[in-house]
Length: 308
Ligand SMILES: NC(=O)c1ccc[n+]([C@@H]2O[C@H](COP(=O)([O-])OP(=O)(O)OC[C@H]3O[C@@H](n4cnc5c(N)ncnc54)[C@H](OP(=O)(O)O)[C@@H]3O)[C@@H](O)[C@H]2O)c1
Image 1 (cartoon, rainbow, N blue to C red):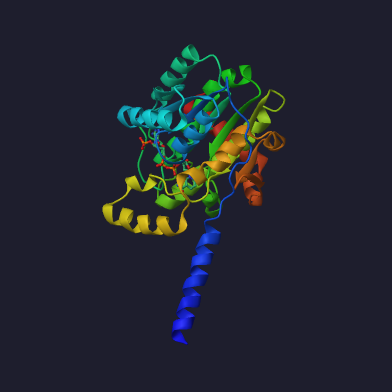
Image 2 (tube, rainbow, N blue to C red):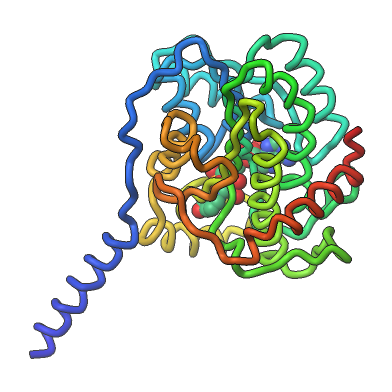
């Protein structure tokens, strides 16, 4: 009898895990010949898989990364897997506002189009500071992309219809923003959740500002993905996470699917400012849809990064 219970429990756990790991794949076969895609942090995880998928569809793919060696290695892999030679790397450190400004200057000088901007790079729950003294999560995940997008907005408008896709996380729901302390840097997980909530507000306000100008914006939760984010932690934690990730998280290719869907699907344009998960528009907690907070965050971010 015990044996039967054990087998039944094992079977149910297996099916439960299978169910948790199920992800929709992007079924849209649209090609992107002649389009230019910029992906921050495209040397690893979800970003690299997105780069492969979009290069396979004919896009010119530029990965914006902070480490030249890792980026060049990724470019070789993306080219090999997509059979496209139209993949290149440009250097940017999103933890440094000067680096972002220089990157954008160079991008605008060299690239005549920007059809899809994918704000993918991200740091997980870490307590650290950027070169400009912002908390690492808020500084890189939100402010860095905020500045980058604003500086590239003229090119996005010229290339209309264009899209901005920003990677967020369903863990946004565990925190709210505190405008007295946007640079909150106390509990690592909470700093991450706040930065991911900021990504959602950013997307909503960007959609409002660019309405009717041919630029649309989407926030994407990729699912829980077996990517490289554990590299920021100790050996033991990495080991533990490897086991958990193997059991419950999805491969990076599956994690890239909603990003690819938002990059190519015609259906999504009706949902500019929306939050997407598993290749479909998904509802948010009511407070995460507050347009007043979104605008307030936009204005605060403008002051912090000194966007004219
Ligand atoms: N993995 C998940 O389960 C999960 C869940 C929800 C949301 N997300 C989101 O998905 C996005 C992609 O993450 P991932 O899971 O693919 O993690 P990942 O494999 O660690 O990739 C993160 C990328 O961001 C880059 N990056 C970090 N700091 C940077 C900086 N200062 N300047 C430029 N690039 C920087 C990394 O570059 P280096 O290689 O040089 O470090 C790397 O290429 C993130 O925004 C993350 O928050 C992930």
